[in-house]
Length: 369
Image (tube, rainbow, N blue to C red; front, side, top):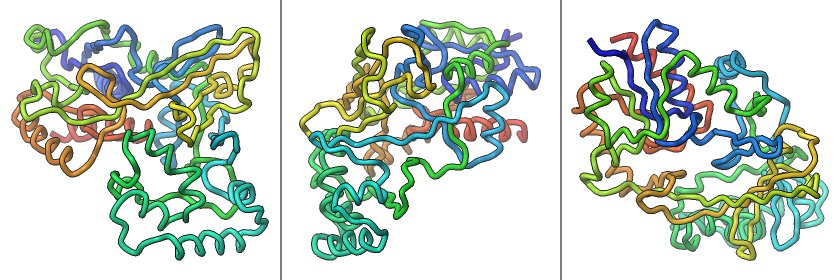
């Protein structure tokens, strides 16, 4: 007899949701993770009484009422609204592109003026069949917005000139002709009071947990313990990069702790959209939770090329990589008693609500078998 019904490799949001649902159904679960903590990339590290988003800013937002009610069973959310500011060589602009942005850029006052200005630039600089990201962006928002708020930020993000990036990366650029600085259009938004750890701890409270464990180095041992495995690590690594590795973009974070400054930038998120700075964002964590404690902590976020062994953040979902992923999917279908899921297992960028939704769909599909 196996000791567990499920071995869940990865204690992030996908694995934790799956474990919670299976425990509710009377199953026994063992959750393991390479890291020394649960929570995956939504883990918060408490420093000087401030919840620091260790792996980059995470702001929960969704239009799915069921998912919103689902997360609220674990924790109460505050009323944080994401209103990032863009800094271009010392000039400050509201994001997403809205009437505040256009007024600052062009000195215009009305939506009609803004529409005319954008349309004029699209006609002057745009192209009918964009061949690269630069042409695509100018076709959508014109040259001024592109050059100050898109071009250099995107080049830092991807490590390539916009002329060398495919047009499909930017399918659309949200433009609002209102004075609304709320970045997301979703109905529900906020930060869990006490941080994201509260959610994961409650999800996993009835599971056995082992940390600092590399499943791939102990595969046979762990397979003996459970009837079925949910693997949320990198799918290509699972198969020892048989067809080569999938490409990702990675990030580097630098924390700066200030004990004599209580408010560093006046906002949780500042995007730096020029090459003057190597980082793309500065996050001031205390603003996520309206924390009025003494001192502050900011994190500078630097995009970087990914190499084997680095944390994988953003999949490079171009044609070549998607084809490679489909080859690994075929291998995954033949793997007995192993399910692949989550961001790394599905080679897919997920917002948090979509992670939970995908995990619940997996649970539902397994019940039907």
